[in-house]
Amino acid sequence: MQGVVRLSAWDLAVECVEEALATGVVPSLERLGRLGQLGSLPSFIAALGEDDDAAELAADFARERESLGLAPAEVAAELLTLGRVLERHDEPEARAVVDRCLVGYVGRVTAELADSARRDPLTGLLNHRAFHAQLAAEAARARRYRGRIALVLFDLDRFKETNDREGHQEGDRLLRAFASALAGTVRETDLAGRIGGDEFAALLLEAGPRDVDAFLDRLRAGLPEGLLVSAGAAHLPAECSAAEQLLQVADRRLYSDKTARAA
Image 1 (cartoon, rainbow, N blue to C red):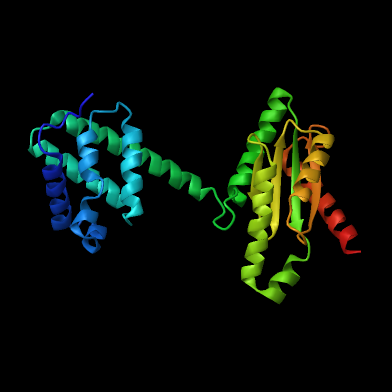
Image 2: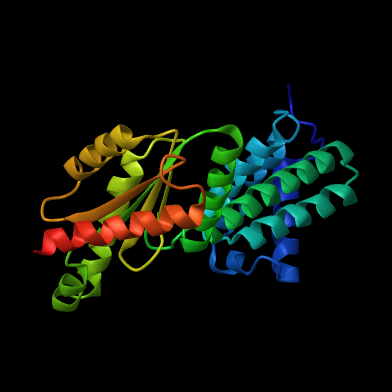
């Protein structure tokens, strides 16, 4: 299927760029040469109507524009500008596709921002608030449907001493290394989070004591040499009936493990 644009895609792209520059809605364009300003815009315009998946078309276009340094708000402003240009030139079908592209792009960016707000910026794991919210939800679900979950808390051994002695860069490297190992060990259905400075947690769904032991063996086998952690686990419904109890029991066992390792 050919695109629906009847006029020259190149001319429409040039007009879109000139309008965006004149109105100042895409300031990043000012530091680019003309070829950079146009980028994939002509081919994007030419492709309007070729693919029914407007979200995919928008994603491909946005990746190229973002690679040139345009912020998400600027990409959206450029699509809005293109929509106005197409409307002036009586290109209703192309304008409708651009509108769908804009909706798809804004939806994707909104979802990414929402997910980013739930993530720890250093490790990419769930942050304290998001993990605890998920823990409460999964504990309630397990009670309702008679499922079982295991909460495992972790604390990096001698982290403060290493951080004080070798600096924050080395401390951050250790945190990222453990987070990477943890994320690589949990299943897709499980959850992993950073809930404190050097404190981490994993929520294992439909897991019993043997599952936790196997999980810890795999995790420790995947840790870089010299990176040691203490751990404590608690189980629902075998030992606890609520998220708060899981945290208390797991924390006590974590403290006992850490004390034993320091002895």
